[in-house]
Length: 609
Image 1 (cartoon, rainbow, N blue to C red):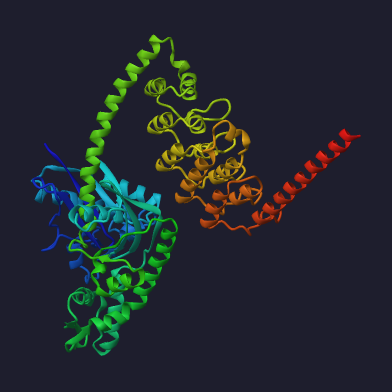
Image 2 (cartoon, rainbow, N blue to C red):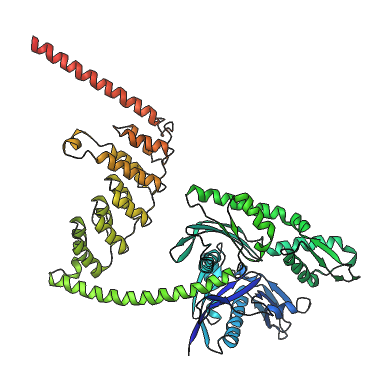
């Protein structure tokens, strides 16, 4: 029997499920609700302890004998029960968020198996999560899904899923680099920078923000308080009237006005008109607060040169016109609230199902091929008299002598390229320090740790910078090296490149190395353009500019650092600025010239006498 995969947008207030159409291969949402694709993420516990979900739970919202529960997803990871009651037999019934999420997902899975796949099993799911979900909540969500009957569960962030769906379904408008996703759902508000990497869309965990208490439900509450204050004499019932309030809010996203027809304990209310202008006044302080959050996040992002091309609006609340208007006004970026904004996260989860299935298949094929390659490599080494206990020594020997053929052979045989020699260096450190770019790429391709530190805490990038290896610097940065990593003395790669660029003397020109200055200038420019901090201090408070100022240096490099923002007036921990060091060095030079002249004069006098 065939098995199926689904993508689930487990929202705080509403849930959608999507899959890939078996013929077109395009993602589409599945019909779950009453005339809609979404189902309320709600539950109620009946007097006899039965768990009821979705629209059936909504039907019992006014039933005082039932306990109505919402937002239970946000309690995952906590052991505290959300509901406790005593049964007829005297036993306590405890219902936790794990119980609710697990049973809710189980009912969804069984419904989809029955109505969509004609009783064929649904065994795999990609479930979306807020970017702010802690590791404990993520583990709890996976465990709940597994308890619901999914044998294979993967999680993806809601912004990543939305970005994938947008790039697939809106190819002509898709971003090519970075985008800021604003996911404003019913329960939470999330901001995240997402980046496109070929067919993949990934979120940048250091550039996320949001408000777990500011979803569309907050706007429902504001609108309800306003309506209730205007119709006080009718004694409106909040529980019964809230669905009408929610519908009014949704209609005001499309029409300038909406007429409410309500009834309370004191009779039927007269028609009450709500206007979009009035609604905007209610929510404006919260929208402005969210816009300021986005602006602060963008300021941090722009400092890292990851400027987004656009704002991608997803989630039901983003249908409110004021949100788009204010976000565009504050950020200066175009905001896209496309036709699939509400379904974007679920559609992206379905796309993730396909991508992960392909990744799993590719991994298995690659694993099989690697096993064959390993066996062949070991046989070849054995024929050369190299036993398994000699692989590590042979790995270092091949790297130190720039023998790429031998290196590839031993990598295939042993696999571990992150071993250290007695001096505390890995093969990658050696390749970086010796300007062996081909070997460096082979080691990185085999999984070498690009930011590993040697005995002095120096990374491969430190060593490549110290020898002015432009090719290695670029390769390491492209492989994700941290350009601001520090050694045990607090020095960055830029410190080492600046110091090494000063070790120039007449012997380099005589020996035919006149291009050395240009090489270091290019190396330093590459580091700076990749985000190296020109004001980084070492343990003595020295910046890269101090390194240049204290020695004979290339004026072009000095000017390059100044142009990049280096401060010649920044003092080290002994109170010396780069400008002062230049003056001291000039005085030493004058003193040396005077001493040489005195020596010449004295020698001449001695010869004459």
